[in-house]
Image 1 (tube, helix red, strand yellow):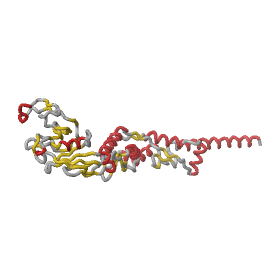
Image 2 (cartoon, rainbow, N blue to C red):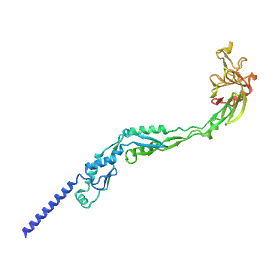
Image 3 (cartoon, helix red, strand yellow):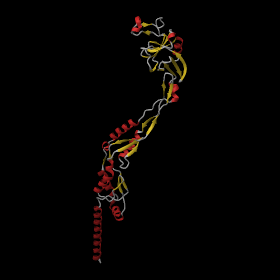
Image 4 (tube, helix red, strand yellow):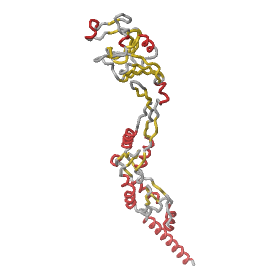
Length: 345
């Protein structure tokens, strides 16, 4: 009885040892096999060896990552070339992580999983490196092309009218939003195309602001010898003026009143037409000073001034300035601050 018991114990121990050896051997034989249920970047690598998993992930994940990323905006496509992005995926670390996850839980847990076909619920996100600098430069390029500065409302003057010009909103690329989308596309093999979005930028001056923006305006029609004073974009007064004679044409275009003076001094141009007065300075109010009462300069020596030669009004008679009756120029002077726009056409 004692001997049989002893033999039974020994036999049991042998069976246990054999079972343990077999279990370890079974576990060891699957140490290079990734457990079912594990994915790398969405790629199912369950049941694959290290080499097989590396190849599978490379085919499905890495190769597409080496394609261009496309950004669309309003029908225009911008390409971020793969060689600029320089994507590098650390597959070795990802596969090692899958193998480590396969060994979690201890021997009994793994043996039970082998026997029952159980799975390990593990999704490994591969580490992907890329050129942040290339993405930043790309977004700046897109922004420069997409961006439109807002345009303030303004007026379009002619010699006889002032037409309001409506403001225009601008557009600015939502750069941080696009950067996030591009980065997501860079690391996502199935989403290599994204849409850029913009936001409106508002002008500082709208048509509703034009009256405040242009409280006073002057227009000159040389063909009819008329100067119009506009207040709040409406004609307030029309004056008859003299303009420059042939060869001494009044400058045309859009200017502003640059300076003003009461009883202005006349710095006589050093020109043949000035005769003996050429180069001299004639004080304001002097009988031989043709700049009577007021002066409003707008361009390179040309300006608006009074004259006692009222017969010249309504003709081309001056040396480039705009002549007005003395009473008219005094009246106009008080309505026109420095900086007032003037259009001569």
